[in-house]
Image 1 (cartoon, rainbow, N blue to C red):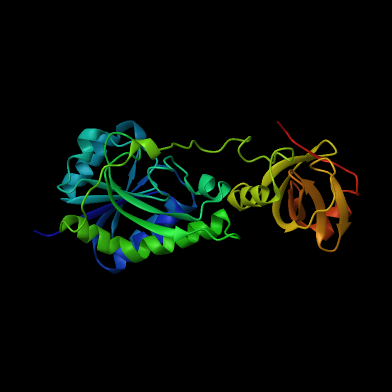
Image 2 (image 1 turned 90 degrees about the horizontal axis):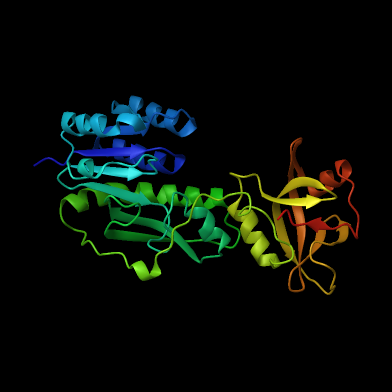
Length: 310
């Protein structure tokens, strides 16, 4: 029997994989949510280029429209990459080989809509793609395969996302056919190691000078770059964001957040536990500035103190 593959996608993480499936002539139908943004527009363009139908799904009537979509294209499996709408359980059971989710994070430790942010912030050595069968619970279906990808010390959210998308494109055709051919054994997720992460709020993307060491702040900045334009802090009562910093030697014992010196390397700031950073790139409403330009428009001197928002 012919394997007929459908794909649902919503972000740039899915685009290389969508293109690879089209090139390999494996996918017969694609779907996106009824949300217009760069990724959904690009997905439609890719499908048009390769002559693949691309259906837009609304949340309010997803059960009826997706049932029709599966039946119309006689789909035997549906691959899901960052699709935002909950799919009803009765729809998940319609394709012969079900719905298979490509979760961009390691399960079950990093469940949630965005596992990339907490993995980088928590300084994990690895991220990856967890491929699992879908059931009525978010990110809880049986695991089929995990592809681990190192998170390097200087990897930003954007860098790691790009690596994930390229690896996904390399493996997706083999996974789609392998699931249908029975090459992957499903294993139950262990709930004792499971954790769910909500989308980050302002507190999650803010610097806590009095609690965080230099390495922890660098990890936070990387986790916020580029999607949040850095992490929030206060300086002289003004809200700003720091995008990039490097670790510095520290022999001082000032209050965390204190500016120790301003020089060509950057703005040296005391952190928790006798550690320090050179702050190098900043985001203001006026634009993005390196340290040398930042100090020209935002007066700052040794002794000033960056403050916690919360």
